[in-house]
Picture 1 (cartoon, rainbow, N blue to C red):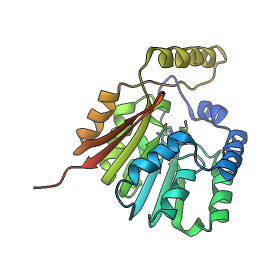
Picture 2: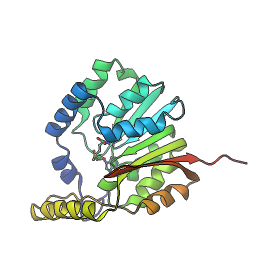
Picture 3: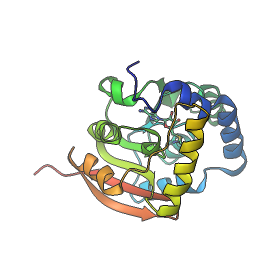
Picture 4: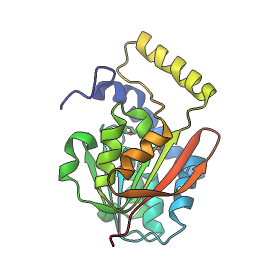
Length: 219
Ligand SMILES: C[S@@+](CC[C@H](N)C(=O)[O-])C[C@H]1O[C@@H](n2cnc3c(N)ncnc32)[C@H](O)[C@@H]1O
């Protein structure tokens, strides 16, 4: 695998997003359903019927895909950088009876997106803040979007920057190859708009903002 950058490596991601954390995420989803931010993503998507195919990049345990399939999506693909979620994700799919409608792939979407089929709906929930090269990640996601791309990211508020900056410092002290990034929302939108999408809806919360970008109609 091509190194992502000096800050981060798959080993760093595996430390933060461990099997244990994936199991805990799975238990939480079984008990309480989707967390608040993921629910906001679903709400934004449900402004129009969700049908056709879904591609989720960095989808973790895949709970969002389970909900989108229940809402009417035909099939989903999950692309994850690391394999730590796979056992929990497969268990959730089995329990929901959706194993045959989801394809799970482990790879860096930025370096391998050419081999991924475009989808009607593409989702990146809390992912751009976990990747150093945001323009390439968002650009590749936009290129695979037939209709709508929904992205959530942390807002660049001073106290969010401060908290995440302290977290990054700790990760560096512990020599963990992982950092969190607060990319400017305008730059995130521009990276998608440069690939023919247009921002059509935005939902700003305390920490996370969600934007929906739609493929501009051809004249
Ligand atoms: C904070 S987690 C979010 C997981 C899930 N989307 C959620 O909201 O619960 C970010 C995830 O993005 C994945 N990720 C980051 N960059 C990626 C890339 N270039 N390709 C595939 N997955 C990526 C990481 O492995 C990690 O699991």
